[in-house]
Amino acid sequence: MKLAEVMEGVAWEAWDGPREADIRGLAYRADGVEEGDAFCTWRGTASDGHVHVPLAVARGARALVVEQEVSAPGLPVVRVASGRRALAGMAANLHRHPARSLAMAGVTGTNGKTSTVFLLHHLLEAAGLRCGLIGTIRHQSGSRILPSSRTTPESADLHLLLAEMRDDGCRAAAMEVSSHALDQGRVDGIAYQVAVFTNLTQDHLDYHGTLEAYYAAKARLFEGLAPGAHAVVNLGDSWGRRLAGQLPAGVRLHGYAVDGAAPSSARSLRLEASGTSFQWERPDGTYSVRTPWIGAFNAANALAAAEAACALGLNAEDVARCLASAPPVPGRMEKVPWDGPFTVLVDYAHTDDALSHVLATLRPLARGRLLVLAGCGGDRDKAKRPLMARAASEGADACIFTSDNPRSEDPLAILRDMQAGVPDAANVRIIPDRSEAIAAAIHAARPGDVVLLAGKGHETNQEVRGVRSPFSDREEALRVLAQWRGSAA
Image 1 (cartoon, one colour):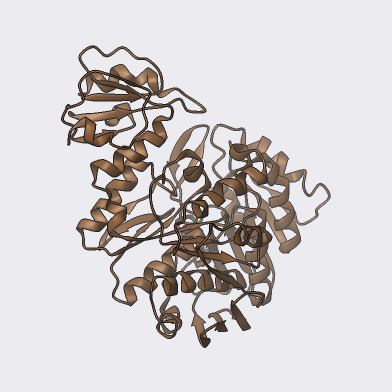
Image 2 (cartoon, rainbow, N blue to C red):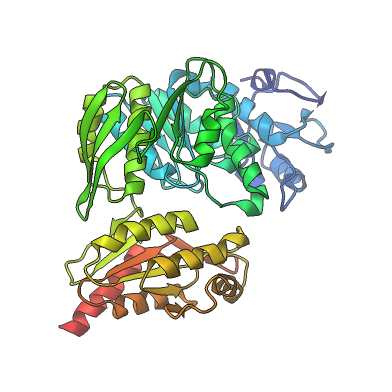
């Protein structure tokens, strides 16, 4: 495709050089440039991508799209106000707007995005609607599964994925849309037929600064909806109720809430160790639902996915039936497989709200004590650390605070921030090494207890002082349980 075609509709400030260069691909990392790519870069919060222009040129970049003047004799150089937002338009053009060929469903919110997207994908596939998936745990196009490094990919990667879905015969795409992606313009230009809002609680304030700014980023997903599009909104959340009152004209609201204060609600909720059942009441009737997912918060996720599926044309009765076969989501209330006298679960809960809900769900299911292992990520929102600690201490009988991706921070400093939230708690132990902490939690368990390993969920690495090493809570727990069984024999 010619550079002029790649740049069609993309705002630019200056253009130096020819417009007919043949562009084979897009790159936003200089070390990922291949011969014939257009290299697009920008000034980031931690570094400036323009310093890598020489490497991009050396690797064969055929054009540069930048935010400031650079020297690249013989190459077309296009200056734009925002490289990141320009990349979104360029990627859509290069791949011939794949999102236009798909029924796009975007899910945003602090908690529940992954579970809702997994369930929506399941419902659409069960109805015979071939669907792609983009999210925190993985990306999927047909039978092809790809690892995920972030919740919402950079726009060049996103449109490549959407193009694969289109070419694989997918008719829909269910994707998580993070506040970072919305703020940075990674999904600019994508027309969503359905947008879902799950909830909003404190998180990512290291990036957004305030809850108001965090909400404003989430709301952008809905501000771009066209008349006739659908907004599935949790009216049991105060931010959701605010959002529902700010939707663009002509957007169809599908409000849901577990407590019944919405057109779509979960009545007669029954929570059991084997799953959750409820009466799904909506304007067109009442449907009996049984899902293997545990907890009231998962009932909310089920409502969100169900309403999104109905908005995309599925029959509510069929949706209710298919909820019974909802697949497990890796790292979300995931039982570690073993048949011992106590239960060990892995969950991604990494906000105080999510942790409180998970512990409240597990409390009545524990015949004995409820033990929790929790930590807080480094280089992230420090204000939530004491809140996480308080949620753990108040919701469990015994807590172990440990490391959870401290990144460049001192793990002990993070743990001190957590301790500040529960200075006098008698049920808290501090074990900085996560492997040792998991072993301690399991060896402390007695028959009938429930042990929750919170925070990492599906993740398969631990980042300490900037170095990533393989680490899985699930695999570590299995290793310790094997030792426990051997010592108990």
